Length: 208
Image 1 (cartoon, helix red, strand yellow):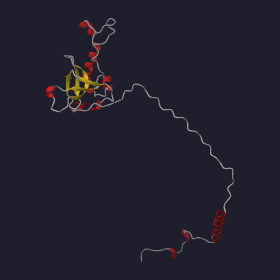
Image 2 (cartoon, helix red, strand yellow):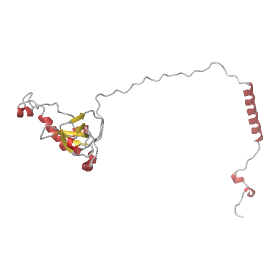
Image 3 (cartoon, helix red, strand yellow):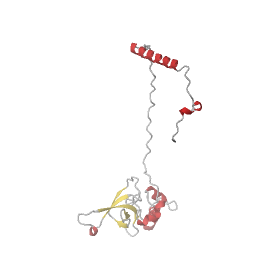
């Protein structure tokens, strides 16, 4: 019962409709407690049941609006969800998507291709928001992950030719070396005062 609700992404407060649908399907299928090829429906009516009207519980559908309720130039169909089978006649039990009301209809178009939709919450479902079934998209077959080929390794190429400095580059390097020698020569013998060696003349006071 809850498996049907979880598969259709329906709230768990619709367990009543799910239970009635399970009982209906049980009466139309074979049972190990009965002779082979016998169903509870055949034992009662002495005829095999017709299963052409069986559809997936909770599937998306479109029910025809009665002619008396149709507006001029209005919609002919209403969007709903399949909630089972009518107990008092040959009809399908549906729930309107916008208003959340239940109704029975004999003229329904079913769309059994689930798309992972979540059943809309109405005022009647406000107390059951915490029991919403997790929505999952059923897949017919698992798609294997795409296997990518390994990236080719590229070896670094080194040139066998020796690089000789140009005339301008050699002059530039010589000038930098001479500047470094002059700077090092001028810095020899010069003693830089540290913070603890400063005299009173080096201190500045902000108060006059």
